[in-house]
Length: 474
Length: 99
Image 1 (cartoon, rainbow over the protein chains, first blue to last red):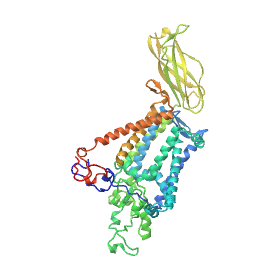
Image 2 (cartoon, helix red, strand yellow):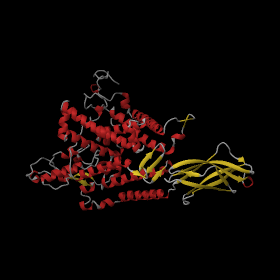
Image 3 (cartoon, rainbow over the protein chains, first blue to last red):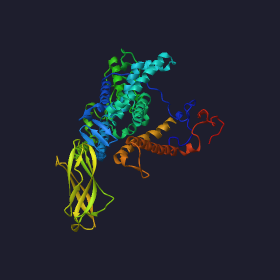
Image 4 (tube, rainbow over the protein chains, first blue to last red):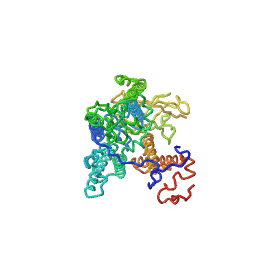
């Protein structure tokens, strides 16, 4: 524990909550808007990821929703692919690939995911846009929050929260649209006939979006995100991170534009605090790498603008590596150091798994067979003296076109299959058929005899599966 | 207290989400029995209820962890100075002993 011995000094005795006083109480952060190369990239990625997220459920494919995770029917539709719970391994594969990609990108360029693609960052960014649109820039927001409640403030706050809630509700609706066909869902919303669980999940996800992007913001990254805590495992001294060039910047200090900093004994940092004001997590990058830094590079854009105004070179804060800043690796070798063993190992493992995953998916037979022995009758004798076993064949047609199948059984004796109806299964469905198998008594030993079922699609003989079972004799 | 609630609920939520994925992969609500009787619930309801069940169970585990990780110092006496105790605490006034 942090406090093995003496009593803790209480920082804020007026705090009404005992636990809170043990921590710094959160000050609301008003990130200043910033423009520049990285801000443009972040905006582009926000738009791109959200275009995919909000748009994908509306996309149609072969007369159905292109991407639909149908929990009720237990089928996942992903464009031309239909995945069943039995294909769980591919989902696991996707998760492993995502994790390894994260490792690779983090080792190369730090928290690229956090700064540009993480939903927490993306929604916070969108909510900040709305906030700025309604309340104005940083200084106006701070002034507004200090004011007492009047009609104007009430109006502005109501507009902001109204817009936030509308966006959050739409996000919740879109999220549920991935699990329930979105056109049906839209119809249900329009006629106020949403099911209780659908309503609940739309509100739940909407509320989570509103709370996380509107209120929690950087606290999610600082206190809730496990990735922020273990990023150090993937970092090394050659990882590109947002860094302040202390050797160039220090000693910092204010000065006029016409003043020669060298004559005053100053570094290039004018101590304008822009880098702190633009930071969405409210840290000072000049203190070095901190786990709160989400790598959004807003401080780089902010600082570059100041450097331009002062007529100094850009890049006082820039993407660089610990080794480059320390002078261990010369600046022109930084890119070369990207191809170091750690990165190569991550890339190789990732490449192998992606290949294995793709091969597995392409070789997957879109047909599955389960054989369930009839529990009521173990074995019975039919008219011609042969023995009969009854099975139930569960046929899973994972293709979207219908198929009719042929089944034959091989074993120690010549086996005859008696079907009540043809084995016709519609596209992307599972059907169960009772099947009677008959065999002459004399060629079988008493007890269980191994047999094998062979199922083949009549229209496409390449589509076939084999499945083992047993035939009981007495 | 806010932090503590977050420490309890948030990891439990993450674990519940993962468990839910596994639950979906391995069990079909249509074939599940509850004390020998079929579940008379829609698949959506079953998945939703199980999600909350996993969340509550995870939260219990986190809460127990939170509870047990208190140091002997915290268990033996209040970690706050008397004047720093929250308003309304009967042992807030200096002089009132709190062991």
